[in-house]
Image (cartoon, rainbow, N blue to C red; front, side, top):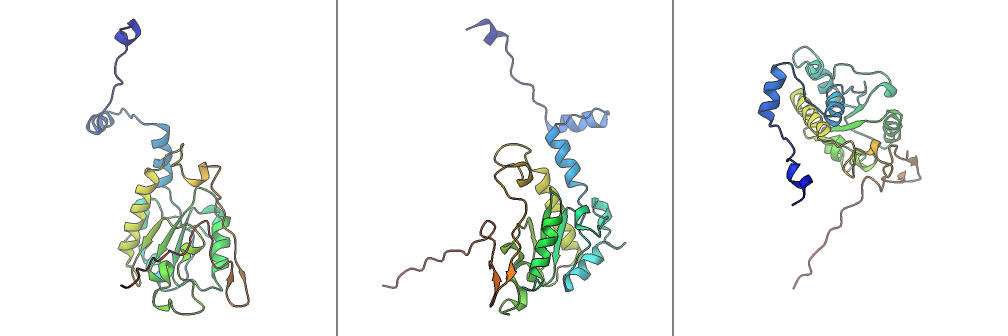
Length: 219
């Protein structure tokens, strides 16, 4: 065995309990990745934007009874250029869909999307309507889905906490890095135009494709 191998020692690891004890003593051990994701997750600023009934529940979440300010998201920005969270709260009609996507494209990275309520997720009770989009995830990437019709403010707060967990789990390098840190990911989404019978294109193929249903043949 070489001298280098004999003198080398295994890397020192520290447990979460030891790190918590050091933090209580005023010693903070962290990494650039942990510091970056901590800052992003605790300063998520939603866009001051709503579509239908779910927007009332979103507004209620910012009031004193529920107090979304506890999670660092009390700043509802009036401009998409100052926000990093798009809460799609309500029914997305095909007439409104291009405007929602334009707002998404105007938001700076890193940005996130929450589909709040059945209408934003799948069209809800209006799913069979010719004028309703069957899910905003057909055009923009959705990070968190909050089911309900409409979901209560507590559900939105739970979705926000889940989004914070997801942000804290991001890697700032490698193949699992978020899209704004990767060269092979497109940040903006194409804005559809009004066609003769439907939106053109009807979906963003880089975000959503129709599932393939395999039917078994009857004997």
